[in-house]
Image 1 (cartoon, rainbow, N blue to C red):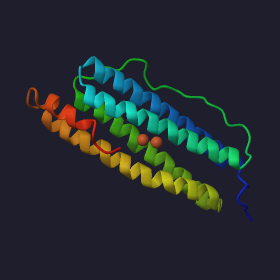
Image 2: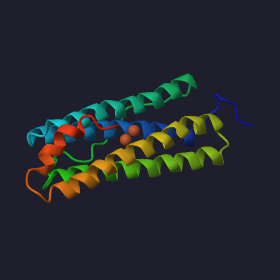
Image 3: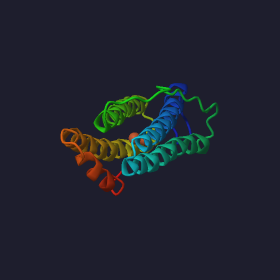
Image 4: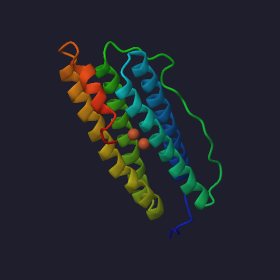
Length: 170
Ligand SMILES: [Fe+2]
Ligand SMILES: [Fe+2]
């Protein structure tokens, strides 16, 4: 029988890994933000900067959950996917963000399966927040990517769109 506090080593390691994925994601959005600044696209850069903070808050949400359950061994061990960002156009940059979000959803879904297999309802409850959040994020980024992919076909159109991006949902 599980209790709220009890957490298996497998589940704990999975959560620690996920927290680190969120931190890597935070770094990736910060790098994207810097890349957009290099392209003189401040709206896109601002969205990614704000989103970088959101991803960091996701990591902290998981670490705080681990702390509350008095589980030991959490550590920051981020792996950054790339040390150079080169994209032919803004749509390619958004495609990277979208694919990262899709992969993150898959990882969260795997953790939900594990939580349910272990009847760890406390982890399941934490993870359900992330399930919903991934829907919001995949949807937001896919929307921007789709628009970007259309707009880059016409010179100058993405630059007009850029100003609107900063006000888009996260
Ligand atoms: Fe996240
Ligand atoms: Fe995300």
